[in-house]
Length: 258
Image (tube, rainbow, N blue to C red; front, top):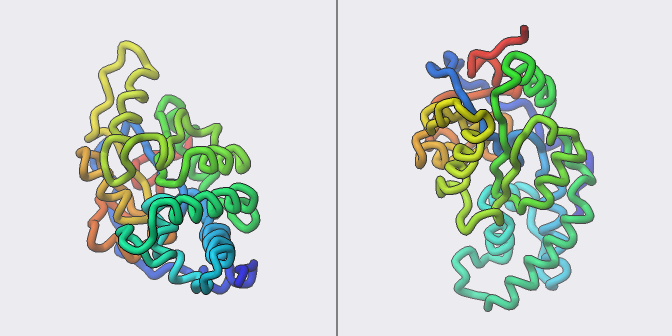
């Protein structure tokens, strides 16, 4: 059940209308972006890779919508959920490791088959960079770091970010705050002599409750992206602001082109 371009179009109807929010009441000194569902739509390639893994293991394939609901907590949890074993109670570690290895090997080859940058992302990042060239931006994703960096490089997103960390960059993943606190500490070193950047001066931008909780767990602010892969999780997480498209980002952080 390989998912093709028709499925991409079929499953990406316009997002529902959300309440319009005022800009954040701070001047951010650091922006941290999620990747999947925020900068890029990788749903089809992730789902195809999961189903290829299931076929390899002799298991029935899963619908795209089911697999998509498993995305957001890293590759290992995505594989465990697809195997019906999120808690590790059914399969031994060797079986899961083999499944994960196959998934990652397949995804490494097919990660750019259907993945694309959301409309407006490049323009929004250009606007932000043009208005404040010294504002550091970074990527913090639960996707493994190598495909994250490869994808950003392929789409020339990497030129905007001083750092790109993945789910295997640290001993914990989002929503644990260790990753974002590391990014804050590193960003503070970019301009020697300037006061250290604080979490309250940092904005995390992402499409799921994982991103919103990551921000909250360290005292940062958050923008939830309603156009992403997991907008249904945002209401309960209560982000500080909502973006209906990437073009909303500059205005939400009070940045406009010079």
